[in-house]
Length: 105
Length: 168
Image 1 (spheres, chains in turn yellow, brown):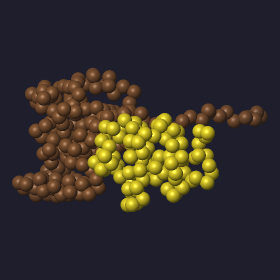
Image 2 (cartoon, rainbow over the protein chains, first blue to last red; image 1 turned 60 degrees about the vertical axis):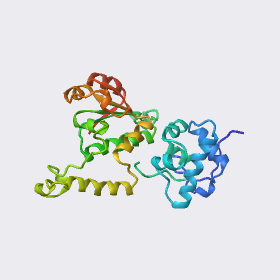
Image 3 (tube, one colour; image 1 turned 90 degrees about the horizontal axis):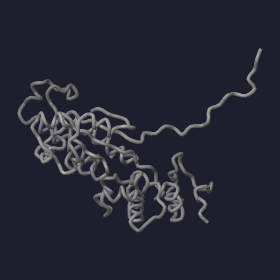
């Protein structure tokens, strides 16, 4: 059963596929968003970043920048880009079920 | 009278995206360097490939002895909205730089040395312009270790092939 959970009409997403309601998120949804975005398997390191993004967003109302991710998540900038080659902040936010980060940094 | 029963229609195309950028940094002031770093970092954040090519005074952004001392231009900069003689007061540029940096730190923009590290770690490739390096009498040792090569403008165009070139 690898069909995408995002096809579920109850999960509301924006045109780019970011969840509109973070509370609708769960780990199965995370895994299917990851697969759809070129991350075949979420390792512990991926999860560390995804959870950090999500928790920070839920606590502060804003997703952390790549700079903050590199300093505070415990994963270096280099490794962030290895884990999420198509953009760590954007992709980790998407997989973590939070809105797209708006910052320029 | 003829009528078209079927409208000719194009096959739907994917919206065009930018896959690669090569950004030229030609100025050595704070306001000359930041836009290029922000654009390069922003490109990587979107998964876009990015190269930075430093030329003329833009080389200050990657010179070990200078990149920690980049200042705002307070003279000859109409954006400052100040009489030129005020901008020329000793220490004024340093003061304006400190104020601006404090403001940038608040919105999470790093100081230049950290920003150069950040973009390099993000996969941006840094190059120094050969003509400028020769003109200033510099060598690869004068630059931060992230700088990969000193290249000619021809080599720059080769590396930029297939992407967008941005001049700052």
